[in-house]
Length: 112
Length: 114
Image (cartoon, rainbow over all chains, first blue to last red; front, side, top):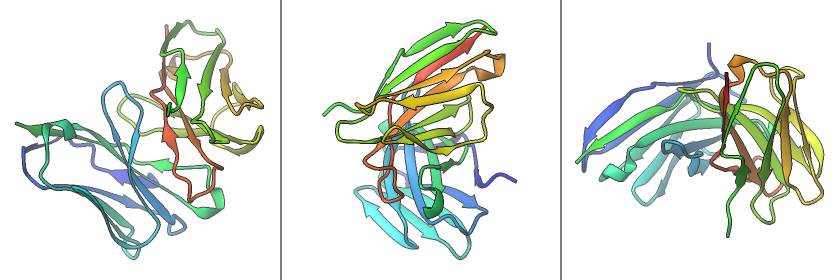
């Protein structure tokens, strides 16, 4: 079993829709959580970073963490064609701060 | 401000050769981490360096090594290249490598092994 599971997609939605991206993790020691966006032939770009359960909002993006069920989500409101990319969830624990565990990524396509 | 810069952007090698990849962190960042991203997968942690010392190592063979220089730039070396080493190699930097300092990535070096 992978430490972080993520549906690879692809996911295709019309412009303006609300997008929901999800990951599950297996290790309860994981304490901080991130979402990265990766465009083709580019490095991952940090979108959201949180280390508490609950919601964190930044513009059109909301990250949600439920530590009791080991479930993390990213919601994108008013989706735009420029949001088309691969979205990577990632997590880590305080004792090994250097090591981030990534999901395999979900490919998202926003149709104009 | 310049982000994380990596060189070269692309590289083609043959099996058995050696390769050196280079990374310059964001100005003021003292920690550098290296990741391998195989097509269709998320990045996998290889090494982290902070103040020229290795702070963490992932599950990679001894053919992989790295170092950090006094100016905080870093090199990743891979010996005896295998076909399976074909991947995007990413460098990430953070202020001090602690959990409350998120890592910022460069655009990577795409390594192809023939």
